[in-house]
Length: 89
Image 1 (cartoon, rainbow, N blue to C red):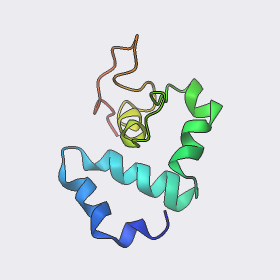
Image 2 (cartoon, rainbow, N blue to C red):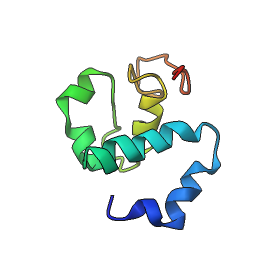
Image 3 (cartoon, helix red, strand yellow):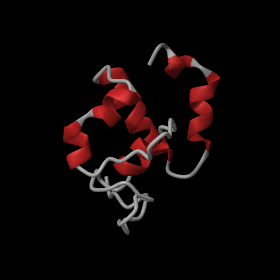
Image 4 (cartoon, rainbow, N blue to C red):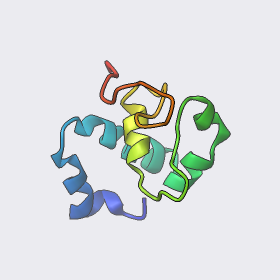
């Protein structure tokens, strides 16, 4: 995370609805597992669990929205009908 957790930019991410999924993304995958977003998107394990990133896209929001489906699919992926913020944890 390169110290991102201490910057104002990180806390701005939590201004929208359902910040819990962003928090889990940042803490679990970056702070705890020491993985970058690119590492996560390159993982075949996560891809098999429904994580998807559009070709040429560098946005990381898909990780948080994927987590918000209880890690079953990525909202917006062609051919899927899953809705974000459906996880009950």
